[in-house]
Amino acid sequence: MSLLRSKTAFMEDLKEVEIPFKQGVVESLNAGDLISLSGTLFTGRDQTHRRMIDLLDQGQPLPVDLAGQLLYYVGPSPAKPGQVIGAAGPTTSYRMDTYTPRLLELGLKATMGKGSRSMPVREAMKERGAIYLAAFGGAGAYLSKCIVSAELVAFEDAGPEALFKFVVKGFPAVVINDVHGVDYYEVVKGQGK
Image (cartoon, rainbow, N blue to C red; front, top):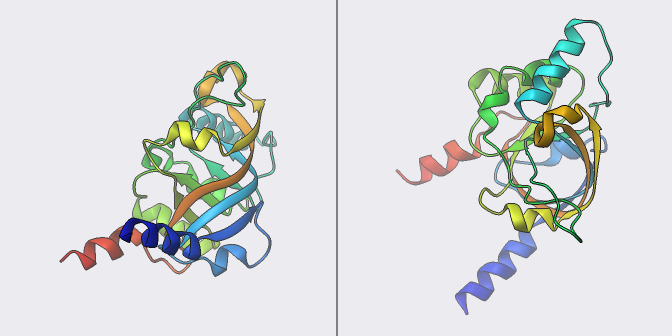
């Protein structure tokens, strides 16, 4: 019975969020909020980030407009017959920390992965009004079922690290860093003392 109540409480606390983000939505989310994402997001890991920064350094446009968008740190596995995409669990976010502040300057409103972010990234998010979300690690097969469509957009030779556009429905995540500079991991650690 207690498990049923906790699932009900979870569902009652869940906030539905459309992406790309409409004005004011990111600012309304707080560290610790459980959200359900629906809409369009982009993906990228190390190679995609490196290539996007190289394009910016050369004065070239990016293959996608990141303004108001979410960038999910994932390297999906190939789709099996009848699937949209294979397992699509998050990768470790700190590997993208070197590149993130520059992308936030372009209006990127959220990043999503697993693990914590560096202080420079947290400060850049606060300055730019952006957030960081955690997807559920170890749940790649489940998360792939929340992906309605997947389209390769750029950097095809990077394989699973290429830039994809996903349309998602009911994709679960937790707000870790909000626009006010609150870090949910630190909040939880503080409660454990």
